[in-house]
Amino acid sequence: MADFVHLHTHSEYSLLDGLGKLDKLIDRAKSFDMDALAITDHGAMYGSFKFYLKAIAAGIKPIIGVETYVAKRSRFDKEAKVDTDPYHLVLLAKNEVGYKNLMKLVTHAHLEGYYYRPRIDWELLQQHADGLICLSACLQGQVSNLLRNNQDNEAETVARQYAQLFGPDHYYIELQRHPAIADCDVVNEKLVALARKLGLPLVATNDIHYVDADDAEAQEILLCVQTQHTILEKNRPLTMIDSPDFYMRSPREMQELFVQYPEAIENTVKIAAMCNLTLSVGKWILPNYPLEAGVTPEAYLKKLVEERTPARYKKLDDEAEKRIAYELDIICTKGYATYFLIVQDFVNWAKSQGISVGPGRGSAAGSMVTYILGITGLDPLYFN
Image 1 (tube, rainbow, N blue to C red):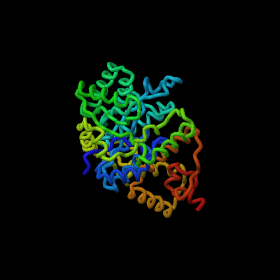
Image 2 (cartoon, one colour; image 1 turned 90 degrees about the vertical axis):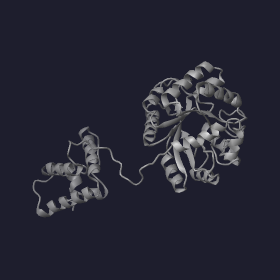
Image 3 (cartoon, rainbow, N blue to C red; image 1 turned 180 degrees about the vertical axis):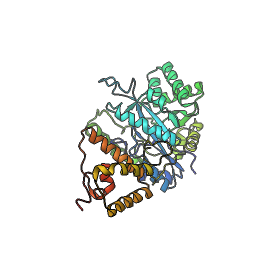
Image 4 (tube, rainbow, N blue to C red; image 1 turned 90 degrees about the horizontal axis):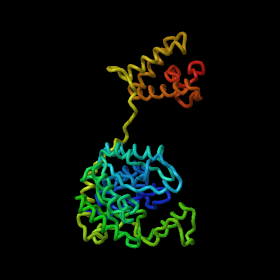
């Protein structure tokens, strides 16, 4: 197996920013004999589950991550020309706890912190740091950005804060080599010095946005679509063409780039070994419906049907009673009791709030149980 793992990879799900298709990224990693690969799309997890399934099928360990946007102030601050340029931070899920925290962070970013980009903040990171490995990110990362602007003391303070939050063995100073980018090598030297001073580990990454080096021009066109500029304009606000090395480099290329820092290469394998996420695939995952101690969803569903039947039917013959019992038996034996409880709960709540609810559609409209529970409004006996 290769002794390097890519931990900073943008796929097509970094919308209008990543060109690499999941299948091609996985195939290329496999061709390099890598046994793991991380996906770290910008601010989102749209492709995470699909990536997980495809990677597993290809025999590659999937590492699910996000390159988050971190607000420079609070996620609730949304002032023009002040809060439009957030920092970057790479977060990788070690396990299910980390995966759930990653989902919570991304959800809050979209629902509360969205201002040009879905942003999290320090408050959210403090609440949802468990199970995550943190990389300091690219030049747009806070530590790198401060060092680039010669704010070395501030960079040290921030690095200490992140190391304290995630733990010194779960916070890595990230090194990237894109020589055409101004100050890249200078910042790397400062990052290494800072890591040495604070006793923090280094990790080497390539800021992958496409699969092959030949894709650089296509990537540039994609960025033009994002920024609404043309490829002929010289002073475009976002460009990568001057540094056409945002492709999936081979392990050998990465080793040669970071020959001075072999531990940064070795730590990619170490991080991959720490990430062991297993997702439940093909299983029902429903919210817990609140029930009294000792009461099962099946028993409570039957109780609700019994209590609500008189409101729908004054009298039922034996055939109708048998039909209800048959429906309940099917619902319960197939494991749908909790689902029916949840649906009747939000449908009846919506009706109580004056929110319009349709009378029913499909096969559910032919169920006496759904009619009795208030999920549907069509009497299947009357309408046959």
